[in-house]
Image (cartoon, rainbow, N blue to C red):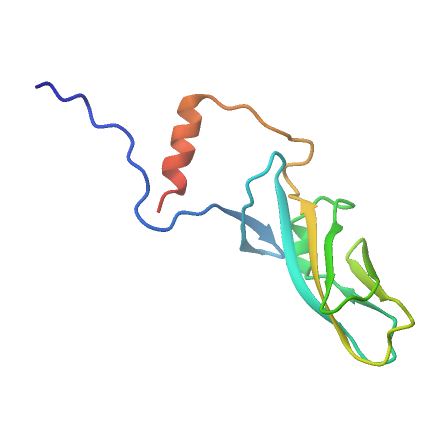
Length: 142
């Protein structure tokens, strides 16, 4: 029996993609999500105290600098109980608001913010050759 040449082998154990990007004179890693554009995301929990209908806070500087200016948006806003609430991002500031009729208890809200990675703006479904894809697969398998 004739055996062909051994081909590219799959990863052993855990394999995931990271984007290592510069942020304020150092490098930080961002876990990658599979999608047609290169987006980065941050998930955080904000607490609106009793009597407070809105709150504005600064987003993480490393996260903001990893994104194209103006690309940040809130894609998820989930309160801990059924309460009308909204959130939006302006530059690096996140503003969270809730219905003024529900101010008697504090409210935790989980937020997901996404932005386009700073060096990948305008790229959607970028094309590669099979050889490039295989090299990429090997590079991320550790």
